[in-house]
Amino acid sequence: MVWILIFLVAYFIGSIPNGYLVAKSKGIDIRQHGSKNIGATNVLRVMGKKWGYLVFFCDAFKGFLSVKLGWYLAAAFGANVTWGALLAGLACIVGHNYTIWLGFKGGKGIATSFGLVLAFFPPLIVLLMGLVWVGVFYFGRYVSLASILAAIALPIAVALLGPLIGVKDYWVALGFSILLAALAVWRHRTNIERLIKGTESRFTRKTKPVGS
Image (cartoon, rainbow, N blue to C red; front, side):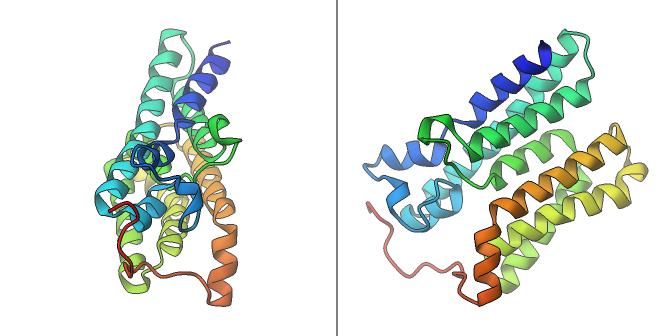
């Protein structure tokens, strides 16, 4: 019963469409602009840095909060806290990617995944993921490629460093990190196709933000 409770609570937290709500508050339907995605990157491109960063923070906080709630709910019911935390993190990402409020269409889960990783994994793992993202983005200017490679870096970092830095329930965490990376790659499959064809958009600000 507790697992169903954790999943439902985290799913509904994840399903809050922050990008859509922030844009709508300014009279913009973000689904009709840019990439039509409700995630932070599209909000940033369409509306500017202030709103994009706000959406990133809100989406990351969903992942962070869900993991912590999953942990505490599992502990309260005497269940395995690692399983509770990771189930909640997964449910939150599913909620974000397939939100019930927008016809089960949502974002790609990168900011939410970052919040999850920040809540569960040791700081060194988070730092390495961040360095991969920043490095790839700096040299390539592709948000999608940076996000994909940062996601792939997670299970690699957990596999190599997990036993050395005390990752909780190592094998469970490793399996979950592989699943998380697979989800990120799957959600970016159209971006991968465009990257291969050379048609993926680089991150540049060429136009005035919508609504400014």
